[in-house]
Image (tube, rainbow, N blue to C red; front, top):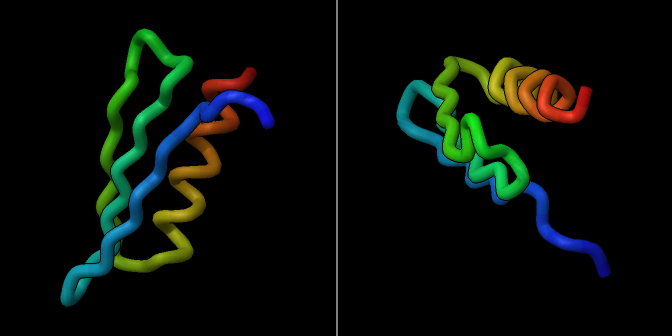
Length: 55
């Protein structure tokens, strides 16, 4: 099995969703947080972030 590239934790509050991302390969932004009102928007932000990292 390969190495871990990201650790992603998703939390649900009363009116928001929060994601904490630890990017093991990124030296510039190793820790990131996103907070949105919907799970869909949160997942879109996570996906965009990962795609930008790997371009």
